[in-house]
Length: 394
Image (cartoon, rainbow, N blue to C red):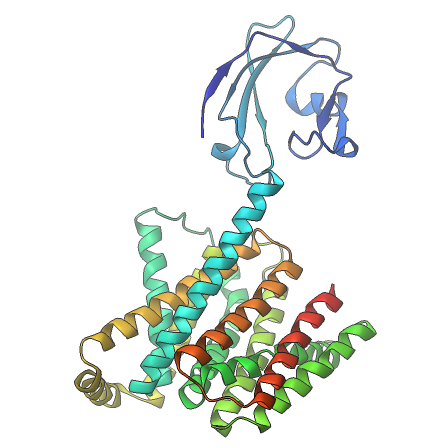
């Protein structure tokens, strides 16, 4: 909310304290304040004369990390013997309560979109078992959404260069493989089983980092892998509708996403692209990579014949299913990448674990997936191990 406030002038002596970070106000953190003398050089202020505040505009609890001048509190001030006001930008951080509400909204939206995507994705694959095309449509929908958003200026287009796309290429390759492999898995087995196996991704992350990159981890991290591996193994051997292609698809997806994260950390260091735009660029490049392989693996003739059969069996609702799974795939991933701009990696890991639980439980209820008690125990152990891993790694 923006407003203009005209104050009677009051002075700020040079001995008063000014916040460290971009002149942000933090009244409860004296240790983060520094003397006005250290600010004076950058604002052409004298430390020997009082500073008078003339007016404040756009005052509100705004994000202190924002680089957008429109999102900052503006302050007009002048020194004691000057008639020309000085323009100051004061960044005011969000209150803790507002930040918690925002994170809660991110998580709730992320989980809800992910559950909806998995439901419609499984419905489509049951009626139209062509995972390569289904994966391509998901990326195409997201790419189209973001291109239209940039063209209409709903979202600000990222400023990229050739080096950015070169660094993004290996990330996109790994993302494409992981996406297709997960879709192949869900076309062969229950959604719940795919996500139980995918909860074992931390084990792949530690093993790849240890043996290929030479990284070492504390003992609790290695110990946390035991329930993950044990729980996934127990769930796999007790799965009533076990399928090797579905199992291997989930495992390959885990490995691919581990490499995606590694390439992303290496290639994007120092880049200033937002989480939303980063995922949009990733989707576009992945679509370019995937399309020729999808045509080679399945092809338009098979797609057309399968489409007609699905329409004859399901009716017009099938078109809605395809559109929904494509759009919701992009939306849930976009929200997850946007949340990375707001929360710590630990909080994100916890959120990802809870997302996995919500998908597993909801898919079992909606699709009435038969599950044995020992199978449910394996799933619970694996998910618990993932949570312990996220805690131990910090």
